[in-house]
Image (cartoon, rainbow, N blue to C red; front, side, top):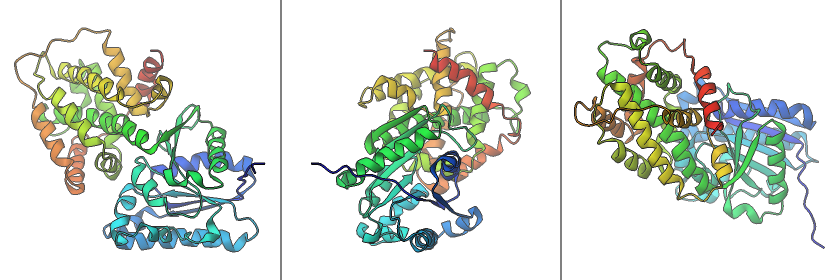
Length: 409
């Protein structure tokens, strides 16, 4: 008779950097903590310390290893009887991406970074948190315990209730004796935190979807901001000068929501997904030929129309149900797609001839920014400086407006 394995962890460790992913997870864990009865260990790296170490990736590896090994060692020492535990690893995408090179090409050594490479951790579930899953999944295949990825599709200021979380599967770990039980535990954890949708995807499906809902969504709003910057007769943006352009002002509010973040967050989304480049080329080809029309608001509307065509073509190639496609979205991508749906109710001038409002220049600058981390940081921060007054950001109201349209169709 087949033995049914059980996974009932008693220790929960969240360790790594103190970024947005860690903040989102901590909110869900706080909800879960009151129900679980287990012991919780929070071992975040102070952002200032992290920033100092991040300039040297080898030193960063040592810092992460020290931080995680301490957390794992504490649980092993304090609770010798109960081996089943969960390590939530919230680490920057670039750390996973560069770990292989730093370790001399031997990924089998990489588990030592986390301080849990021995057989004594074969019942430790490692859950990596990342907006791009490929590199983490590949790296963690060598762990002795089960491995899963999760991605909660919202920021740390958003309540988990009603939101979407994705679970991704590390292919080589699916034969682990605790894999099914730990997967069920992960689903139960996310559902208990209030997520409306918990969706299972392959790593490939996840990263292809993120190219659209994260990278392309960010790209639209950032290009809109860049267009305004290039055609605005002032040194900085003043919303009251665009009173007649209500739609444009809403778009720019969303642009500012992205520009409010530190540059490494959108940079990591833009530079670390292998599926971004092909989608970016298709998108720029579709919108690069647009011309002026009546005003800059009109050209941005036309960009959205062309973006919709690119998205529909792209999603046809990904084998995901329509229900899941609707659920796999971030507040920013739902706003973009709600705007697309809303535009169907309004006539838009045909963009033929005339000035192209520096669109090609804006796309060229963005393309250069995507070539390196330093290029992106400089481009992003210069664009952010054009929008100095971001304290009055009203994007939550705009998101609510367009999410209603998004879910109503």
